[in-house]
Length: 74
Figure 1 (cartoon, helix red, strand yellow):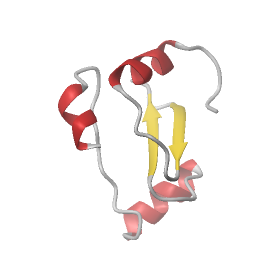
Figure 2: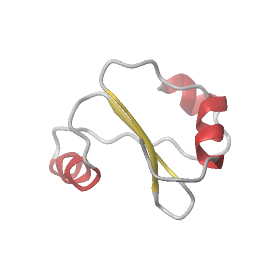
Figure 3: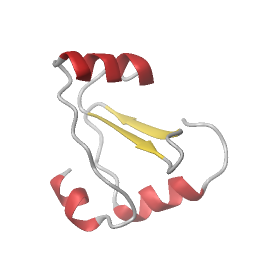
């Protein structure tokens, strides 16, 4: 995640502590059930895609591609 934070200039990377009250509320709001999870939102605050569990952190290219795709989050 820190690599993504350094490399991506098209958006912001924010960290939410899953066990904090705010983190639990955020996870419930967006349906995040496992840690780690990465949620990608567009400029209007709409959920675009979620990566959950022990997955590979996406690269900048994948984030940009997901933001360009029309449709609902996977």
